[in-house]
Image (cartoon, rainbow, N blue to C red; front, side):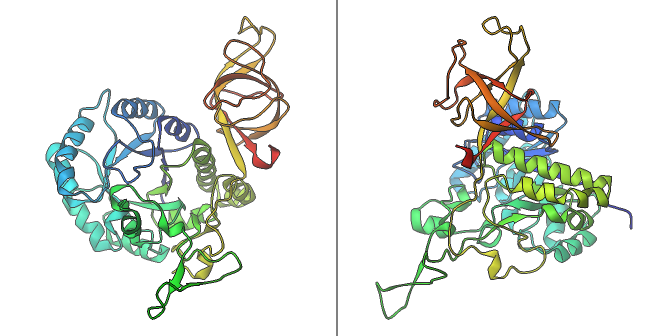
Length: 425
């Protein structure tokens, strides 16, 4: 059987900085949220001005942008939604490439206001069978995001029964939700913050105990070890080792979770999946030969323990984390190189090659850091000198978002990302 087409790599962005990072580090498309109607209220999200700037940047690099408006809307959301979609439609210099929706009412508003808009149906709509896909296709949706509870066998079954030109998108990396397709009421019940309105407090990560009906107030911990148990705390999804199966299942878009993640996370995951997909389409042998690199790199981003979710059947107890709700976090994000001044480029330091960046976390002269390049290369470098914007030498950078010039023992280029192994601090 002929190999299927190369899937789109779809990467999240919660801010303009992260969007640029996703584009530079290998995304084919990014998905973002505006200041309303998306399901990540705690993300920084995009103002209309930032959205326009981000779309222009992405399009200049041949990358698509999809905007999420996938809340489950209430009556008082609808008038504002109509105005919002009208504004998106008229965005200059050009609108986004598609809208991600889950609510039929929101869908109806878009079809009335912006009938030519490309619409993708969010996983929040519980898309678990081919008839659901066909339902949305007949209404005019171009793409449906499969529920995360589907196996590869079920995905192949859907692909065989829907039109070839209809697109299927599936999550392949990131946090898993304990609730079916993200339909969770725990946050609303405990805190009054509605997960289906974008305000989830992630109570699935909290520690719980059991209370027996006839013994009110007597809490019975469910011990996995002396630290207790986190009953609903699922491992993160990671399918980096299964690109061939995802491609052969006929998935059109491989989606990374995480609109609240950092630029370092997005750069690491985007670059690793970009290389894995490209390597597989070079040859299966090249893909297999680089597997150790994929595993090592994907582990450098903030994550919980990894699993393959529902792709190979219903997860058993090993898919849960019972002793902790914390992340593995081995690297610290320092910043991205914005400009490189060659020798003679700066009047106050004419003999040095310096790189300018906006600092995100503290580090010091003498530290060993890592230069992370979009092409997949990593370079260890020693910080030989550091200067503020006035050219004054400094020994460290304690102030977040401070603009600095840095001299490194290895050459860094514009758009390289700087990170530091956490234990090095």
